[in-house]
Image (cartoon, rainbow, N blue to C red; front, side, top):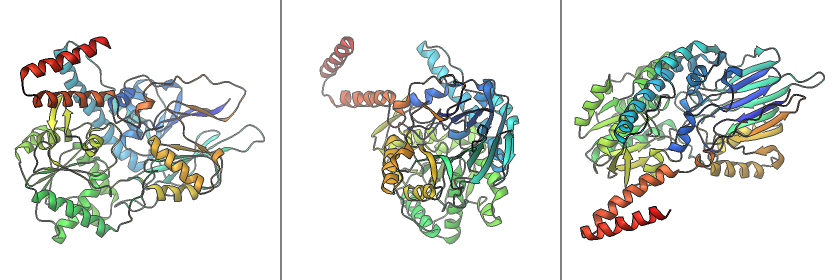
Length: 523
């Protein structure tokens, strides 16, 4: 049978990580992540998988982030009955992350269906529910770093610390060939860490492989190397400026890893006197539960920092709503980190229009996400269907990203050489992948080794006698590295509103609208 890989996500974009590996001993997935970003990309979550879930023997999970794990409940719901292999910390985090994801989808769809009912549109179903997610947790099985394990005869796996978040891994695979042939040797990077994060070690991995699959999120940029002290100084400067501006500070933050890193640094700054006393509200049920998981694996000093007296866990929705009454001096950490879901959108609605408030972005913002739109300098945005003026200070502090920058990625790839067959550049927007490809070429890596696959593209790793069924390609790949028509639509509505408000008379407004209707009717 043919050996092949299909890139079912994170090909030309940074979310939806999923590789379908079809082998002589069965079909396997490396990651099964949720798509995030603009609406065109997120719609991929609702369609069927481009493969039969019941044919998958096992899922090998690199880490717990939802863009790598978030569709596992959907996979189980679609007929998957195999095992999901992951490190113990990843399993612990997923115990909370997957049910939280199901709950968010239920609440988001409930709100959407109320709007659809008013518009006369049909109701939609969530991708999966909290109950679906809890059923999927029964599929988890922990593995240890550095230990070979035979998933099925002829298919061996070993996990390496990727240094990205707690429990993250690169996954090494050996697949037996036909008689007289060497095993095929593959390495999937997962998300590679910086080597300088608060909780994580430097990324590692084996060398001398046949096929290397490497993420390229920051393949087009380098960050300045800074010490923990310098990182905290930069954070303190931003927070002091925000508090001095006289409003609240909203920090959209990924609930897992990013929030805990920020809390450790905030505790150090409060304890040293570098920051004045201020209330920090952690308004994310998932972040609160994940913090408990992190505390079990951290040093006593770091674990103690997570319980600083200035930190206040927001217990429920009612308490979250009450935060809107606070007009100044509050630091609000809330998910999601790209501003696309969760409670942070309510805090943005309450604070974006106030010039004295600040929004501090501390992680990667995918194309078309609300966070990327805010970074681009948008004067107004739409949240939950409402137009919100952006008067708050929008700040960006890209020192907390858990992703390796260009130099670290290059060093990691060079440390895996020789690669005998192919290096696949994945999990990066097209510009980042192209830049990183050029960099690898400049470091004497042969062009024949480099590939930038597209969504749902299948690549043969070893031809066999049995021909595999083709994988149906889905639409939406072109929108992974850019904004989509939904973004254009929101911008057009805002521009029209501003234009109408700026006209002097109702007659001028009527003429403009008549002209627009004429154009629409001719289209």
